[in-house]
Amino acid sequence: MIDKIFLGLGSNKGDRLKYLQRAVMEISLTEKCRVLKCSSIYETRPFGNPNQENFYNAVIEIDTVLGAYDLFFFLKSIEAKLGREAIFEKWGPREIDIDLLFYSNLIYDNDQLTLPHPEILNRDFVIIPMVEIAPDFVHPLLKKQFEDIDLAFNETHIIQKLDYTLV
Image (cartoon, rainbow, N blue to C red; front, side, top):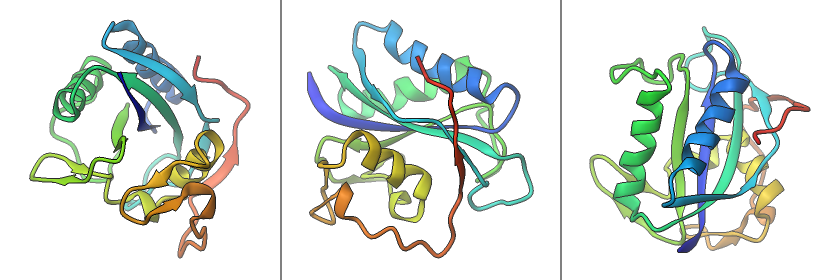
């Protein structure tokens, strides 16, 4: 298995906590993936479209035997299984969003998949959970550990760290 694969989870429709927990459970149910670490859950302001409910966000680290593309499509199938509609408004409300943030140190870009995820550095709700669970992980483009990434955001989204857990 390849280590240092990180996923971003988010939900702002329905029972947000339940959707995050179910996503982690679905990822864990396959023999092809294993959840290694889970960050805290953070309540966050919406990114990109402020006219919607607040999100719950978290980051998890997994091991998998799946390649990056197969993992990407597996994650999309979990989103669909949990009720996310295939056609959705960009940055709009969603039951579940599972972003493939990093696949080890792979740098890749095409129409369907970009690695590392291109919006990471704009999202405190990704960087802060990454610092929490993988402070020494080196961003493959920046060549910096997460604990050394500047947290000077134009806009902060995190409202509070919650006392809930993903597992």
